[in-house]
Image (cartoon, rainbow, N blue to C red):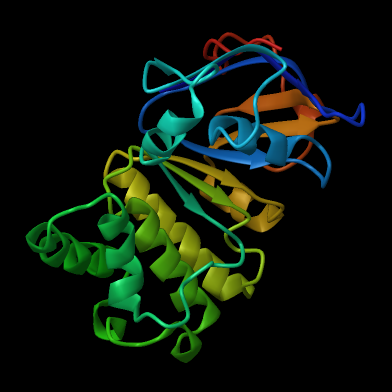
Amino acid sequence: MIELTGVSKIYSNGAVGLHPTSLYISKGEFVFVTGNSGSGKSTLLKLILKEIPPCTGRISINSRDITTLVERKVPYHRRDVGVVFQDFRLLPNKTVYDNIAFAMQVVQARPREIRQAVPVALNLVGLTEKAKCYPHELSGGEQQRTAIARAIINDSPILVADEPTGNLDPGTALGIMKVLEAVNCKGVTVLVATHERDIVNSFKKRVIEINSGRIIKDEFEGGYGNPSSYNIFSKSKQRRNFI
């Protein structure tokens, strides 16, 4: 599903975003990506989204090598990867329904397809009764639920969430994570970059921790921090991941 082989990134100012790294994420996995600011967490996500090119190595998404993908084909790649941001990025002049529908209009979906798909997405994120509301009429959690529905409306097999609970209170954040878990149960591969220790520890998913551009922990049913408690060479917990 997602495979990095010897991938590295050094920025033009000499800063190391990611040391040579190999990583494999299977279809349908739910993965937390953790690490302090500047650790390389965002670099990893940007490489997967094809926002930046790697300096070395190969990146494969859905068995497609995106490393040398030409610019005109990048939008097609991004249809396979839904994205949820910390700041929601909703269109303020459109209703919840229209914000979600817009993602389908961009890929030239037929009106009938939109009418069928949007209510299903609204139901999945628990916003059926908010369909006609505008973003300013929603709570932060409701805005993020709208963003999640928009990210999955085109049946993207991968969902990347970059600090999706960063602007939310703990109770609302927990609700958002349960929505992401429900999306994952539909077979969508979910990557969540987060600093939320309690959430990571509560959900017991796979945890990849990055520090100074290196993966220092890759643990299944893991928790936040304490990399020394994990033997990175343990075959029982490691799946084709090599530092």
